[in-house]
Length: 102
Image (cartoon, rainbow, N blue to C red; front, side, top):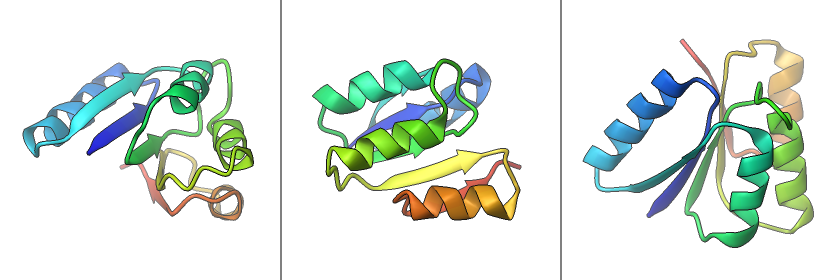
């Protein structure tokens, strides 16, 4: 399975990529929302791990655009935003789960 990580923290993205690659997954990484949106238009991924606090285009907007294209790709939000409103917004936009970064 090919996974897209959209995360602006390079250290966290590299740790996730390493762990997932060691588990046998193919992993792509982008550091901003514009690149995430573009990658999702042209590639076949099995999962998106999405940060909300992305530069250039917020993660919620990336998710909104993805779902407008009727994509059924599973989305896991991994964010530092702990507010219940943010969790509800992400899930309402079509995320499959929401995890708060430690």
